[in-house]
Length: 196
Image: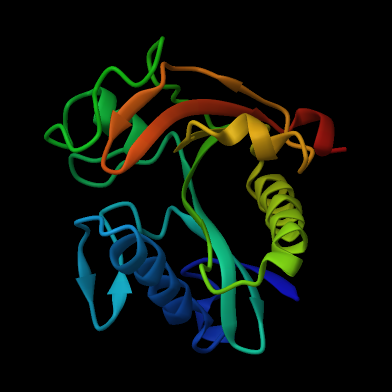
């Protein structure tokens, strides 16, 4: 099992991995969860997949097992910044509630947003913990590479059940909100203790 941090600067080195990451996202979010998201050529994408972001893939033998996207909270591209902030500011047209945070969304070079996290649905239960551990280790390494000490994420409200098992230090920064297909909550992940 390998982990790779992808960027527009290095995607030429990794062959099909970048495209396979977007194919795996389509499978997870559009096929499995039935979310109404943009897609083309069997790949899911959105307005935050820009050169400012990084994508982390856990993969083996060409198959993407899990992944996520990191975007700086200082990002700007046209009218967009990052997903949580844009939702809070009403730019996403209500597809994500605007009252998802207790305070204003951060804009800080040391705070990045983690989105589109997934684990491939076909991963056997027997190795899921190993995949989760690889995902957490990759998250820490990728955050270190970009200088992040904190991540913000919109995740399923069940996060406390598995975050502690994976060694993730997190806290809620917004209320639990029902939309799409479940309960979700914004959280902050503290990485400072893992970045030495």
